[in-house]
Length: 450
Image (cartoon, rainbow, N blue to C red):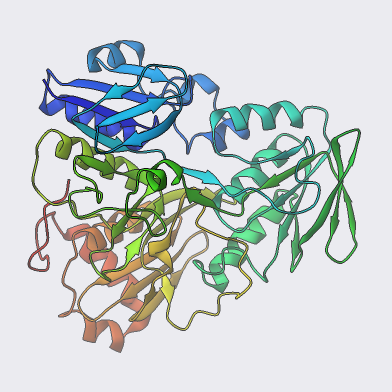
């Protein structure tokens, strides 16, 4: 009987355990995680914070489902990995041996570095415990400051506004999420936030956080303005948790470097999820995702590999369907136009939860736009295929364009018509995506999806 150890209790670790169990019913599987909560949805924390769902609805698997999975679940911290001896050392339990090990430790929020960051009331949203703490601190508070340029910052701003706080949203650049969204998309999100009463401050940095008796009382901006508040919510980026992998001598870049089977530089050690750096199949460049869908897919592939599967894992284009400014926004593939005027002074020091480095690859192609009263679509088309899209609203367009991108549909025959009649280009592409069937019209050598 093979012994499998999974380090990390997020969606990558859970999906790996499920995939492994589906292939090997007799495997010995131990999953080690630092949180004692039941497995829960990280994207659902935004809805919990906004008061839209109760905490119980975030649970991913029922108790009977977990019993059927037959995991040995250990709540503890792994303090060391010995790749030669095939053991892991834990803080409060005996060392564990393994035949195959998966590192799925995720990413941690980048700690704020401004003066006053240690005060009670400076918060980040990375876990269920964080969400509970923010909800507790918001009771009785009248104002909050949010800083950050990605999806998590908007989740914080909207959640706190929904709880009745006046929210000051500080953007260090000239517009929201400028290295991913274009000018119109940024404006749509910002206008939606303002309709909720959220006050935007562009080109604004925190100079320091002021406090009384160890608790946040105000923010002083870099220009000296004072914003009274009881909460300061920071979402300026996350970074892969690399400490254990580094100490174990694994090959690292921005994440744990993995091959096409999610193997690391050490034999019998795999990595998946936010901690792993995969090679982008289109650009050949290593990328780090902090996306739920990416972690789930990679976790499944890692579990299959641990069970002995040999097929390569080809990551799909980065995809996130999220709600920003009460609008459903789908971002898929490479969406940054090569001529984009993104702010050099980005709010993000790294990707955030719900974000991907893959979105920031400059797409060398033509952008087509279509905008209605309540929707907007931007599609980037390369020489042979659709490489990325941003869809505000319009679920039908989202499904169609995601299909074209994920199936790598060859649109080269359609490209002359798109260029000749750009005003109808989006409509033509959506129609093609709605009519297509998986497996048709794909480029050659497309590896099987896991």
